[in-house]
Length: 268
Image (spheres, rainbow, N blue to C red):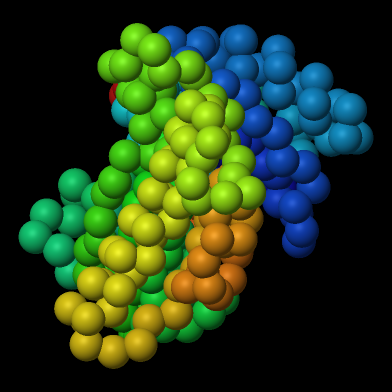
């Protein structure tokens, strides 16, 4: 059984895969959460699902929060007795990373590209509605050629509330009308339709610069909501990053767990 860990800026997602997904669980990202704290929470969920730590034979970690990696690696070593594969640009991805500095690109963007190309072929634009809203471009042969990073929707809402004393904190939803007849309605319209405009505008420019048709695939928790406001999003895949981690683990050999227990911590 494979333990998959996707550590994002907002949540850490844990999942177990054994021919199919046996369970998926989320916890808020806290960079200093210890491996023991993760273990108390995760082992209870595994037990509830009829699974045991000994069932885990491999682990893979993808993270955009470097400070969280130490504790997640310790979790795999101390509680599951496996050395995790960590998603990095230097691994075998099965495609070329055609940007100026491949090590700069976030693991989540490469993982999304791997999973989306495996499922849909190419060329593609992958829109990920996360803490940041990212647009990643994948060629027909699977090659990753770069993309766009914009502020995420929740960051924009929080910035609007913090910077303007009279504007309240609002929830995210599709407004009934573009013209808001009150402050909250006007803010909801600006946020929702503003982001729809951002998505449509950037996809239009990406397609023009690329010089050909590009299928648009969306992922992230808010993908279904924003797909309601545009016809440009052609497919929604909520588990792209998890699938990418699974595929990456299949392509690369499992790292060896050091025999010397002191080396487990020295290697961090």
